Image: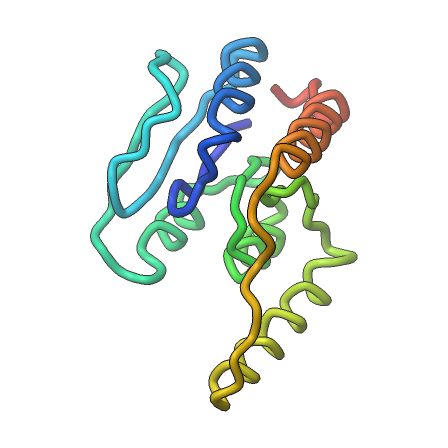
Amino acid sequence: MTLYIDGDAFPNLLKPIVFKAINKLKIKTCVIANKKIDIGKSSLISYLVVNQGADEADNKIVELLKCDDLVITADIPLANRVIEKKAHAIDHRGELYTEDNIKQYLAIRNLMQDIRDSGEVTKGPAPFTQKDAQSFANQLNMFFQKYRANI
């Protein structure tokens, strides 16, 4: 299993959580973004900076992704592509995307985009909090406990 991190907009509060898990469980990790993102120095972590562009990092993640890999991303369309490749995705707030829920998240995301495109002003996501970081840490821990045999 390889862990891929969509580094664009990756919350700073999650960096120590992920870094600790990577080193404790010896997980090969690749951080991919349009700019340099540093979650820590480890022989298990590689960093890949892609060209600027809306989906450049997403496309590279999907290109490298294999079945049962894990992607950390808040990007719902990317999560959908991950699930379609029979891999796993967790968002920054601890939601585990699955075949059972990804289409619903994608539909809501697309509806909100249509509303914004029509000129309506909508609220963005709530500020990222320590509670969100804890929810993420709990979900990440549960995921690795469940899939430990693949690591």
